[in-house]
Length: 462
Image 1: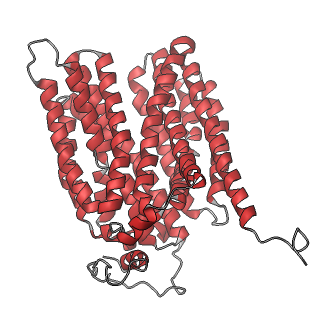
Image 2 (image 1 turned 180 degrees about the vertical axis):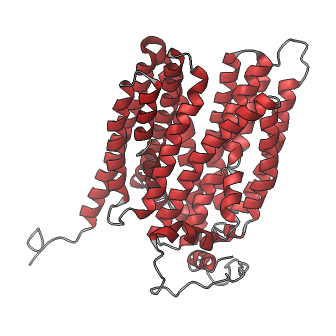
Image 3 (image 1 turned 90 degrees about the vertical axis):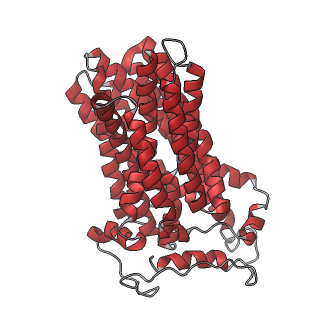
C-alpha cells in the first residue's frame, strides 16, 4: 500500500475523538518512499500517468478497468438477449431501458451505503447480488412458459434487477483517487482524466464483446462473462488496499452529515448532476442519429462502429487534461468545453456520406472527454466528504438517465425529420450543457464576491 493512503485516513481521524477513533490497519510501506511535503518532485509530462501506478499500486489499474466492463456490457447485452428470445425489438428495447433505469436507481443507493459502511462490504455484497441477478435473468429468458416466448414482465423485471445490482466501480474508483492524491490538484486531474478515458474505452469494448460473443457463441454468453468478471474482478477491486484511502464515515462525520443541507449546497450538487444528464442525452441522441444516418446508406449495423469513433476521440482528449494549466479553473474549463461541444455539434447536420461523418465524429468527440473530467472534478469539489460516494454515483447515474431520455427524444425526431432531426436533439443537449455550466460559473462568481473582503472606501471606514 502506498504511503499516501494513511494521510487520507488521518484527515478523518483528526475529526474523531481519540477515544472513539477507529483503528485503521497500517498499510505496508511502498517500495520507494514519497519525498516529504514541499520537496515532492513534480513528475515530468511523460510520467504523470506512471505516477498513478505509484500511488495505487501496479495491479489497481487493470483490476479497476476489468471490473467496470460488466456495466458497459449490460444494456446492449439485455437488448440482444431479449430480442433473440422474444423475437421482438420492442421487448429488447424494454429490457435495455430497464437495465438503464435500474442502474440509475441503484447507483446512488450503492454510493450512499459505501459512504456509511465502507466500499469493501458494499462491493462484495453487490458483486454476489449482481451474479445472482444475472442468473435470474438467464433463467427467465430461457425458462419454459408454455408459450413461444418468455414472460415479458418477468424479463423486464429481471433486467431491472440486473441494472440495479451492478457494482459502480468507476464512481467508487474516483472516490479512492481523491483520497490517494492527498489534495494534489495536478494528480487529481491526471487520475480523473484516466478514469474518463477508461470509461470511454470500456463502453467501446463492452458492446463489441457482446456482439462478438453473441454471434460466435449464443446471446446468453455475454452475461456469463459479465458474471465471471463481477465475481473475480469486482471482488479484487473491493479488497484492494486502496480501499483504505476511503474509510467508512466515523461518528464525527455522521454528525456532520446530520447538519441541514443548505439550498446553495443542493444547487452546487444539482448542477453537475444536470450536466451529466445533458451529457448522457447528447450520447443517446447521437447514437440514434447515427442509427438513422447509417440506415439511410443501408449500413444500420455499422452504428456501433461509427459511435466508437466518437468514443475514441473523446477518450484521447480526456487524457490531455493532465497537461492543462492549473490556472484554467474547473468552472472556466466547463464553460469553454461546453461551448466547444455546442459549436462542434452543429457539424452533425452537414455530412452526406460516411467519410465526412467520420471526420465530424472525430472533431465532435474532442470536447466530450475534458467536459466529463471537469464535471467529475466539480462534483467532487462541492460534495461533502462524507457524501462523496453518493455524489459520484449520482453523476454516473445522470449519464445513464440522460442517455435514455436523449435516445427517446431523438428517436421521435428521427421518425419525422430523419437523422438531422435526431442530431438536432443532440445539439439541444449540448446547448443545455452550456447553460448549466454558465449557471455554475455564475454561482461560484457570486460566492467569490461575497467572500472577498470589502475594499477601503466601499462602505467601510478607510
